[in-house]
Image (cartoon, rainbow, N blue to C red; front, side, top):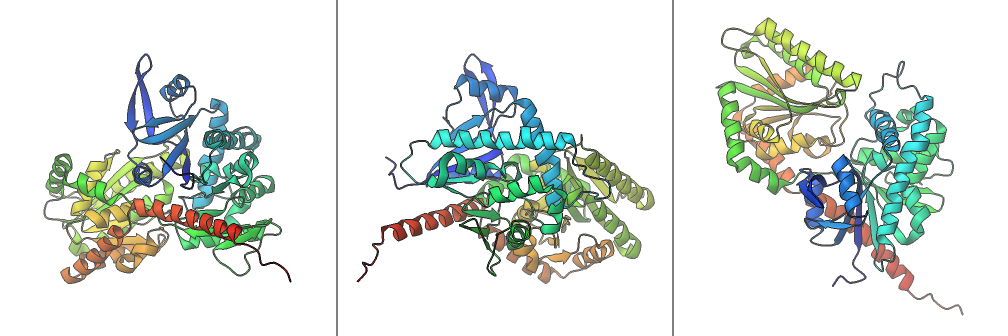
Length: 501
C-alpha cells in the first residue's frame, strides 16, 4: 500500500502517451506513443504513483473518454485521464496561440516586418481557446487529486500549458507543488515584445505561480529570469541567474537537459528490421564518406543552409567530388503552414541544383528521402562519417544524442551553437554558427580530413556523455528536486520555535 508520505506525480501535456481505436462495443485498441516521455514516465511509475493528464486527439479518443465517463483509467500500467475540450476552443488554443504564435516567438522565426499580426482572431483564441483549455486541464487535475493525503507534484509540459499554474493555484491553492518543463528554447526579453501586454503579463505571471520552472539549458533558464525581471513590476532576481522573486514566491529556474532512452535505442539498432535498412543504405553510399542529416522540415532546423554549405564544399574542395554522399532523411512537418511548405520547396530546389551541377553517371551528390521512418534514421546514424546538426534554434536536438550513441564509424558531429545539445556535446563536436555557410563548409572539410585517432577520441567521449544520463535520469532529477523542496518545507514546519525569554 502506498504511504501517505509518498508523492503523487501528475504529468500534464497536450498529447498523451496513448491513442485509442474503437474496435467494438466498449472495446478499444491501444497504441502506445514512441516518445521518450512515455518511456521516462514508465520508469518513474516504478518509483512513484503517476497520473498523466492529456487532451483527446481523435474521435476514437473522445469515444474512449465517453465510455469511461471521463474517469481515470489504468492503461498499460499508467494512470491516464483525458480531457475533451470543445473543438473550436482547441483550434484556437493549439493552432492560433500555441502553434504558431508562441512556438515561433520562442524560436525567433517571425518575419517581424510582415508577421505576426495580432488580430481579432488572435485575441478570441487567447480568451476563448488558450485560457479555457488550460483551465480545463487544471480542473481535471484538481478533480483527480481531490482528497489526496499525500504530496502532489504537478508537471505541466511545454508551451501549450503556460496558463495552467495560474488555474491550478485557483483550484488547489498551495496544496500542490507546480513544476512546468519547457522543451523548446526560451529567448531573451526582446522576443516577447511581440505579445501584447495583456497576454504577456498573465502568461509570465502564471509561470511564476509555479514553485520552479524547468528548462533545457542554463541559458534558457537565465533568459526566463531576465524576461520576468524586465516585464513584471516587482519581480526581482537579487543578482541570481536561476531564480526570481515575485509576489511573495521565490521561483527557481532550473536546467534539466532532456536525453534519450539509451536502452530502447540500442535495442532497436540491433533488431533485424533496422539492420535491413542499414544494408540498403550502405548499398546507396558504397565506399563514399557519408554526410547525414536527420530532421523535420521546418525553418528552425536550418535545412537550407546545410545544403548551401555542401555546395560550397564541393566548389572549394573539388577533391571531395565523387567521394562523398550527402543523405538527408527529412520528415515533413506542418505542411499546411506556408512557411514550412515554402521551406521544403527551397530545400528541394537547392538539392536539385547541386545534383544538376555536380552529378555524373556514377555519382549523385545529394539524396533526399522524405518520410517518417525511425528505423531508417537509426540505420543511417550507424554509418555516417559526418552528422550535421545546424539548427537556428533548438531546445535540445535529440538526433545529435541518438547519432553519437549508435554510430559505428567514429563519425564526427558538426553541431550548431544554437542547439541545446551544444552545452553537453559541444566540447567534442565541431561547432559552428548556424548562419555561417562558409564556416560550415570548412568544418565539413575538416571532418572529412580528420585523423582516425582524433575521430575515435571525439566519438568515444560523445558516446560516454550520452550514456551517462538517459531520459529516465532527466525525469528523476526533476522529481528529486521537488521532493527535496517538500522535505525542506516539512523539516522547517516541524522545527519547534525557540521560546522567548
